[in-house]
Length: 262
Image (cartoon, rainbow, N blue to C red):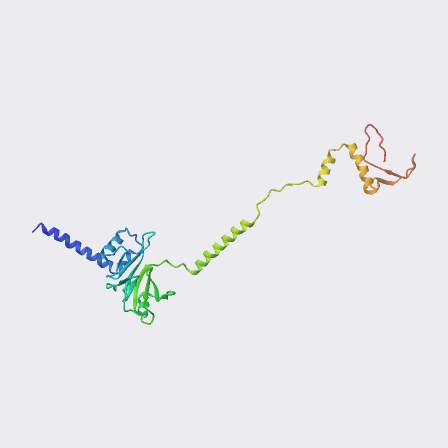
């Protein structure tokens, strides 16, 4: 008999632990499975206590988990109310305590008092609440009867304030505008300096001999002003040729001391 006492105590403690876990699963703590991986200890405990099938549901207990098959995480918990069914499966009403103290007999006024502000979901006979960063959808058969068909608990994505969202949008538009401008702007090209005809002529003339430059100046003077540019003042005295004016050029004949006007 003494040998059986430790075993009996172990069994009793195990049963108490299981009862405590079952109580947690069927109370507010049942929401702890939200966001958990289907291979996590929390999910396995939930599945065992609630006797979930391969579709993560137990119609007899009125409970169903929605699991994202891509990442394997629990997205929401659905607790059935009156006349809830999916496809051809009809669910019994969930009989345990609902998280956040919700009752199947609550009307809108009581729900707002328990859960806070609400909003109607578009296209559905549902009201949506947010409590402790957990979304709560309460679906009705109609807004006339107010019979609750189901309560769905899900992780609520925190809302970004409107001003912050607008700032993000403006920054994105500004960034895109700058990118568009960068694509439109032509690529910088190297500037090639092309000498003008005057510059080319000046370079050529700088390479001429002094005698050639003198001859060219005479030709240029004739072309521009019929030697007016070379014409000097009236001579005060006569000369052998009796020229009235002297036309002075820069022409210097090599080897001659006296240079002549043309």
